[in-house]
Image (cartoon, rainbow over all chains, first blue to last red; front, top):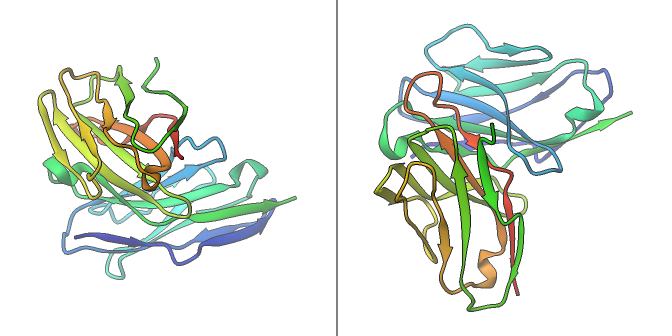
Length: 117
Length: 114
């Protein structure tokens, strides 16, 4: 079974600075999807960024980018120019490309990000 | 475009009571999921469905039941509520085609069992 590990329960960053959140995963599959979700105090789960394992290029969405290291099974999220609105719990998640039960997401325990003004 | 709608948003139950959490989607997605989120933890899968009439257990199904009579609705039933079921519950959906396989979540339902 796949597992996802986020080793940083909490992180903090100064506004306008850059912060990196870590995620590692364990899988025997060669193709899969990885995601970062953001959960603000409203509890809504919001997709931040996704990466297909077959793509070597790291995904980027505006101020958010990932460092995907397939051999190391590492998928870190970099937030540049941090804003107060980035404060939230961030979850790393894994998904198999195969069908049936494998479409489910496996989540890490999350990293709580605080942004200091 | 509502997406995924969960009701109720909040509920307090007494031990032994029953209730149903409702989930409705207008995205025409085949896949639907129920997750629970306990404090300080990630989300754990309770049940999922790959289409109308087809459901299966996830990681933590005990104490819950589901049904999927239509594509749009996927209710989660708690038959005999226990304090261990105090949690935030999320319904999610996804399509089967590339580009639609990202999970879309509802806003969550906070359940407290006293």
